[in-house]
Image 1: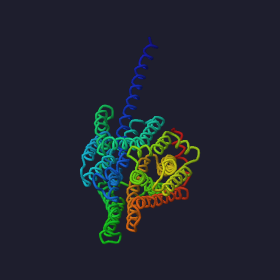
Image 2: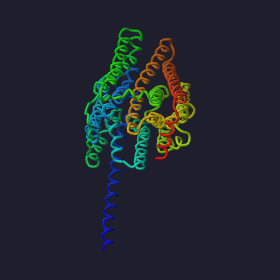
Image 3: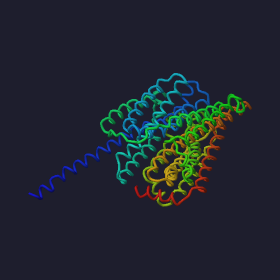
Image 4: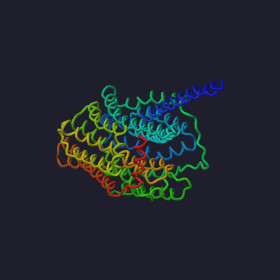
Length: 494
C-alpha cells in the first residue's frame, strides 16, 4: 500500500513534464516561424530589385534605399526593442512586432510609388527589430536548461541561415511567376498564423524591473544620424560630394552621432552602455562586424543586379544561383561552426572565414560582362558562403567573451546593431561607388553593359578590401584567453 502511494504520482509528474517539454518545442517552432518571416525579407528583396527598379523608376543609387530603409530602422531600434520587451513583457511585444510587420508587409505589397515603398520598408525594419530582440529573450525564457537552450539556439540559428536560402529562391519564384509585390504579400498568411499560434503557445510573462526608463532619445539620435549619413552618401553622386547640401548633411549626421554618445554617457539606463567598449574584444568584434556587414550586404545587393542587369538572368535563376552559398551557411549553423571553434578557438575561424569571403569578392570583382555561372559566379558564391558560415559565430562569441554571462545578451545585441548599421552604410558607399564608376564610363563613351559591369567590379573590389581588413583586425587585435573560454562553452553545449 505504501509502495503504491509513493510511486503512483510519478507517471503523472512524468506526463506533465513531457507535455511541458512538448509545449516548449511547439512554442519554439512558432517563434522560429516569426523570425523566418523577418529573415526572408533580408534576402527575398534582393532578387526582385531589378523588377522594382523598372516598375517604380528607381535610379541605380536610390534603389539602395529599398534595402537601406529596412536595415537602418532594424539596426537603430534593435536594442530599444529588446528593452521594451524586458520592461513590458516579451510575449506582448513579440505579438505587437509581428502584427506591425505583417501590416507593413501589406503596405509594401500594395506600393505604387518610391516614397511609399521606402516608408513601408522602414516600418518593416522597426517591427523586425522588436521581433528579433524579443524572440531571443523568449527562447531564453522557455529553455532554462543549458543543453535544451543550446539545441533551441541551434534550431534558431538554422532558421536564420536557412531562411536566406529560402528567401532567395522564393523571391525568384514569386517575381518570375507573379510579380515583385508578392514577395511582401506572402508575409500575410505567415503573420496571421504566427499571431494565432502565439496566443495559444507563448507564455504571458511580464518582467519586473525597478526602472522603467526607456532611452528613446538614444535610439532616435543614432538612427537619425545614420539615415542622414546614408542619404548624403546615396545622393552624393547626383548633387556633388563637395556641395553645400552634401557637406551640411554629413555635418548634421556627425552632430547627431555626438549627441547620441553624450546621451549614452549621461542617461541612467543607456541603450548602448559605452562602458562595454572599454573591453577590447567587444570593440574589436564590433569593428569587424561593421566591415564584414559592409562587404556581405553589398555582395547580396550587387551580385543580384550583376546577374540580372548584366548577364540577363531571370529572378528565379538568380535565386538558384544564391542557393549554394546559403546552403553552406545553413550547414555551418547546425554545428560545423561550433566544432571549428572547439578545435581552433575563435580567432582563426574568424580571420580565415573573412579571408575566404574577401577572396570570393575578388572573384566577383573580375567577373566579365559575358560571365558564365560555373566559371565566374559559382566559385565566388561557394567561398562567400563558406567564409560567412565559418566566421559568423566567432564574431558573436568574440563580442561576448569579455563580458559576464548576465550581459552576454547585451553584447550580442550591440554587435548585431553594428552589423546592421555597417551593412546600411557599406551598401550606400559601395552602391554609390558602382553608380559613379558606371556613369563616368558611360560619359566617356563605353557601352552600357561594359560600364555597368565595371561599376560592379569596382564595388566588389572595395568590398573585398573591407572583408580583408576585418580579417586582419580579428587576427591581430582579438585577445584569445577570454575568447577561447567562450568558444569552449559554446562547443560544449553542442
